[in-house]
Amino acid sequence: MLPFAAFVDCLRLAADEGDASRPIRCRWRFLSADGQPVQASNGATIGPCDTYRDSPPENFDYIVVCGGLLDDRPAADARTVEYLREAASRRVPLIGLCTGPFALIQAGLMKGRRCCVSWYHHGDLTQRYPDVVPVADRLFVVDGDRITCSGGMAAADLAAWIVERHIGRAWAQKSLHIMQIDSARRGNTAQPQPASFDRVTDNRIRRAIRLIEQHLNDPPSTSALANMLDISRRQLERGFMQELGMSPSTFSRDLRLRYGLWLLRHTSRSITEISAECGFADNAHFTRQFRRLFECSPSQIERGTDIHETPYDGELAALFAERGR
Image (cartoon, rainbow, N blue to C red; front, side, top):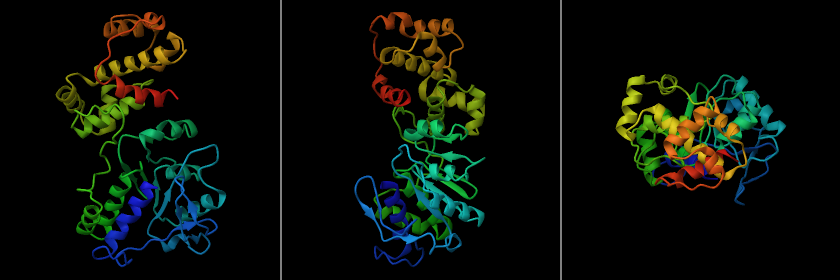
């Protein structure tokens, strides 16, 4: 509901003077396969809706898919998939909000494209579509005529980007200010999420942390991480030292060790399985580094030895619990 409302309201406020809501500078329509109102998971109903049959894709500058709850059913029904494919064939830009990108992937329209997804649904996406590489370290991604957004209030940032592009920056700012938002965030702004280490102010380092968190079992090298962020290795290393007082490789290693500690405490996996899950080449390397950080061995943790908690271990627990679902 929030990404849907934030996106539409940004358009509404940019379309007219004040808060009059007349669709002058931009217009929008709600669509559903059969034209019936659509119920959100919070019980609110969105309508009236037009049917796909009465709304040819070429009538629109953009078609936006706002996803909902993820369950065992496909992300989109057959008529929606057909409509999205027709829109793509007519080169209409497609936008996926929140879990909306799942429908675009199901329709086969994200091959070779970067796909932005919320950190919360990163695991869902990789589990359902292992061939798709998700981008979960930024608010939204523009990849040609495919635009994907992590959801939440980031939908307002994306809508403001579109308004500024077509109508002007003043109208985008006007919408955001009425919505009590200071200014639009850029698409490459890091997503807020658990274990974000709030003392980190450099957006590039926050994004790097996201990437490390998402690849705990296959950690990228410092050079690969710098390439992902489009900065030099030297810039990345300097940023980590300034923000966290350690190198990217040290941060990655220690975070993976803390993930190993969480797995030892909360799962029945063997030390061999955990060392592999945490991106260590073998048990010996994992055990040696584990002892260095925690001053005890993994086998001692299995037997119930307690250790001193760091100030941010509670934050990390939320991240590890989500990853270990």
